[in-house]
Image 1: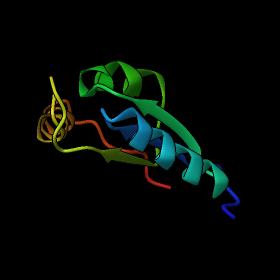
Image 2 (image 1 turned 90 degrees about the horizontal axis):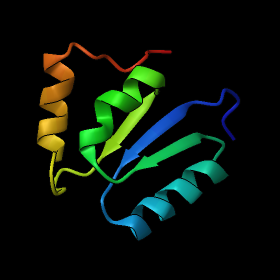
Image 3 (image 1 turned 30 degrees about the vertical axis):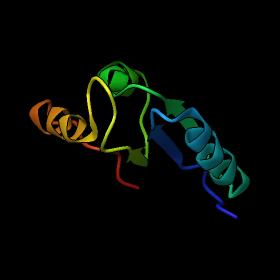
Length: 81
């Protein structure tokens, strides 16, 4: 069981898979937020900090490669703990 509540963002367009990951991670003691579209990434990260982002590489709209490029271009770093 995780003592500190680390937050994980899941970017996955397949809702059943995203939900399964969410339930497993919550069971292990993590805080989890799901989003089904990489295009929401910047607005999410402006409001919240995460310890980890799990990102599907093949999504419609903004795919995982574009998500990584957006993080790099905007100099967004995931919080280190």
